[in-house]
Image (cartoon, rainbow, N blue to C red; front, side, top):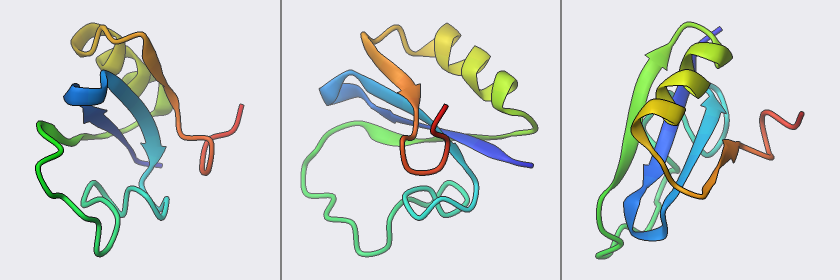
Length: 75
């Protein structure tokens, strides 16, 4: 299983996604996503486990809004 971390610095948000999530698409993001000046956003990974991705996110993105994608990784 492979996971990615999405980060949106302007919104101070980060999320862990499963690689096949429609929002992730193996770290490429949504198809036809409007990226008009939203600032520094991107993907990190791949990670071999959800825990590895969550640990990376906790170390690198000290935002208040962090977690897992509600679409692909509901806990």
